[in-house]
Length: 106
Length: 179
Image (tube, rainbow over all chains, first blue to last red; front, side, top):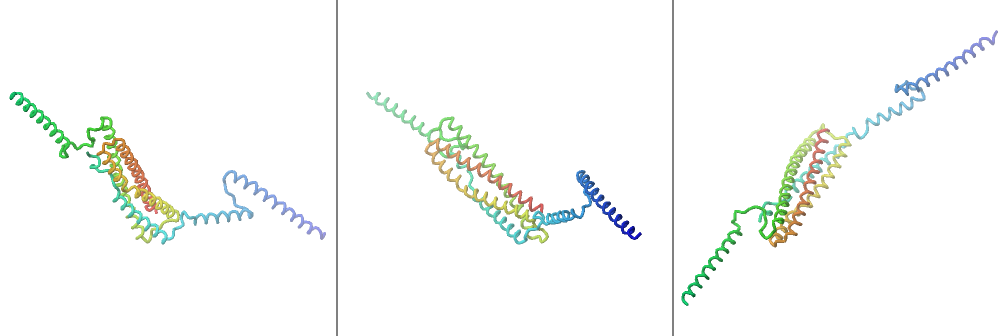
């Protein structure tokens, strides 16, 4: 009589393990089928690290040079240099020689 | 005998008068006060040579007009850029992204290079046209044509440089307006 409860518990535990392993297999096959269909699944524990890595990458993308503001001092220096270039251009334009009408007349 | 002498004197006087008249007409035709102001050279060139010189003169004038138009456009763009730069510097809210700043720096370096190339050509046309006038005085047709072709090349290079400068200026304006 005494071994019966232990036996029942053991059998129940084994059944529980079998059920759990069966569920995992079902999840994996379902997720692979859905991924091929382009639908995202709730990740398993093993996939959570990949998700966290991709979210980290996304946050890194948000901080990429495309949207990172430039150093204001550097911006000011560059703008000053451009202004200087424009002044230099004006000077060259004023010095540029062209063909005059008197050059072409007899 | 007297009649012969008188006849001879009359004929000599007539010949002298005719020669003086012919000389006077030729002097009047070549005087600076003549109404002829076209670019056609002296009659010492053939008609084909005069046509070629006139053709080259036409190209010189067209290029001069094209350069002046491009330069005027560049000056306008330059003033627009200058205004934007000053507004940007004065504004505390506006700022550039790192990418925009890098693009502006590249454009600034391109602009400096083009300006330097343009500056190098200053004075070249004046020197060549002085040489042209010397060759023209000497009636040296081949060197006249060669000199005009060199001037045309310089003009075309300047027009190209100015067009590129205009493009660079516009790109800078676009970056600042988009910031």
